[in-house]
Amino acid sequence: MKNMVSKKVQVMQPSGIRAFFDLVLGMKDVISLGVGEPDFVTPWQIREAGIYSLEQGFTSYTSNKGLYKLRLGIHRHLKNKYDLEYCPDEEILITVGVSEGLDLVLRAIINPGDKILIPQPSYVSYGPVTELAGGVPVYIDTSGDGFKITPRLLEKCIDRKTKAIVLNYPTNPTGVSYRRKELEEINKVLLKHKILCISDEVYGGLTYDFDHVAFPTLPYARNNTVYLNGFSKAYAMTGWRVGFACGPQEIIAAMTKIHQYTIMCVPITSQMAAAEALVSGRKSTEQMKREYNRRRQLMTVELNALGLKCSRPQGAFYMFPSIKSTGLSSMDFSRKLLEEEKVAVVPGTAFGPGCEGYIRISYASSLENLKEALVRIKRFLEKRRSVR
Amino acid sequence: MDEILEILEKDGRATVEDIAKMTHKKPDEVKKAIKKYEKEGAILKYKAVINKDLVRDSDSEVRALIEVNIVPQKDLGFEKIAERIYSFPEVTSCYLISGTYDLLVVVEGKNLHTVSNFVAEKLSCLENVRGTATHFLLKKYKEDGVLLKHKQDKNQRIAISY
Image 1 (cartoon, rainbow over the protein chains, first blue to last red):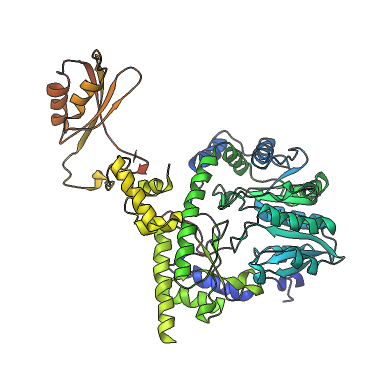
Image 2: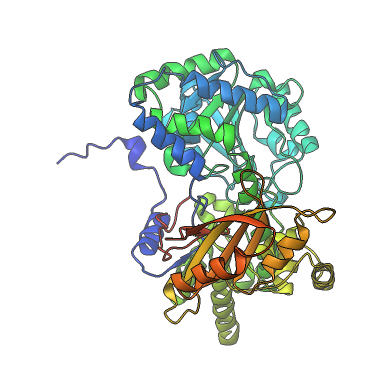
C-alpha cells in the first residue's frame, strides 16, 4: 500500500528515545526517576469539586473560551500573585493543558517559513509542533552558558524571518530559572527585534530560591507576550488536562478561532475542578512545594557526592546532572542503569543534541524511592570505576 | 513551623544527616536544634503509629470517648479535676472542650466491661463530675492524619514521560 502518512509526520520524533521508553515500560519493578509529573494525587478538595459537578449534572459544553468562573479565577489569581491584569472576556483562553496552548499560539502566528527560536535543552514538543504549524524551529544550544539563554546567544540567532521565541522557565529538563534582571535583558532584545515571547511558565509555582517573575510583568512585555500556564504541575492535576493562555486580545482571538474548530472546549468537569483549585488549592500546593524543595536539596548533595556534577536547580522537579565522568553516552548510561540496576532516567539527548553527557532525573518521587535509587546509582558507578 | 519539626513530625526516624541535606544546613546545626526542641519539650517523644486492628494480641481493644460534665472549682476552674481524671492510666487522651460538656476523655480497656466499670466506679463518682455520656468507638478510619487502611500501591503514573 502507498504510504498514507504525510512527509511532515514521517520525519518527526527521534526513534532512539522511543525505543528506550518502550524498554522502560516493558520492565517490572523499576524505580523511575523518569517521570515528568507530580507524585502527589490531586488534593481531595479539588477532586471533590469535580465529583460534585458531575452529581449536579454539569455535563455539557462550555463556552469556547472556557467557563467564565474559571477565567475570572485566573484573572484574580494573576492579579494577586503578579499584579498582572488580563481581561477574562478577551485575553484569557482555557486550553487542554499547556500543550494545546502552545500548539494554538504557534498555529495562530506562523506564516510558512517563519522562524521560531527554541533554546535547548527544551521540552520535546516545541520543535515538532512548530514544524506542524509550518514554521522553522531554530534551536539555540545553551549548554555552554549554564543552560540559560543570554542576550548574546539570542542576537546571534535572530534574522528577518524570526517571529517568536518559546521560553520555558523554570525549565524542563534542567530546573534552571531566571531572575528578573536576566529576564529584563532578554526582553530588551525581543522588543528591539519585535519578536513575540511565548512564555511557558507551567513550573512557575515551583520556584525555590527566589520569587518567580512572570514574563509579561517586565517593562513593555505584556503586549508582546503570550503567557502559558496550567494546573498540571502546581496542583498535581496532570490528568485533568487544564491549561490557559493569556495575551493580547488579537492573538487570543486568533487562538480561540482555532480552538473552537479543533477542540470546542475543555471538558467541563476538569474546568470545574480547576476553578476550585484556584479557590482552595493554595495550601496544598505550598505543602507540595516544601516537600519538593527538601528532595531537591537532598538530591543535589547526594548526586554531587556521587560524582554526578549538577548545580542546585532553582525550580520544577528536575535535576540535570553531568555523567561525563563515566565516559558513557547519555543513552548508554541510561540503558545500562536500567538494565543493571532497574533505575529509569531520561537521556539528556532527548531534550536536544547539545545535551550529550547529561541525564534528566525527576525528584517527583517519594523520599524512600529517591534514597533507594541513589543506593543503586552508587553501586552502578562503583562497578564501572572498578572495571576501568 | 520550623522545617526540622515538619520533617520529624512526618518521619520520626529521619536522620540528622538527611535532615541537614534536605534543609541545606550543617548536621551540627540540626543536631543542636533537635536537642533544644527536646529539652524545651517541643518534641515530647518519638513513637511508631500502630494500627492496632492488625495486632492480634493487643492489650487494649475497646476505646470509648466520654463526655464529662463538671462543676468547676473556685480559683482552680477545671484544672484540678482534669488532673484527677487524666492521671488514671486508662485515660489515653483528655481535652477541655467548649460547648455542651466540659471534658472529652478517651479511655481504653480490654473490653466493654472494663470500660463501663471505669466509668461507673471511678469517673462518675468523682465529686465534681456532674454527669457523663459514653460513646464506644466502632471503627477507626483516620487518626492524626494517617489513614488506617492497608497501603495500596495506587500509583498509576506511567514509568517514564517527558
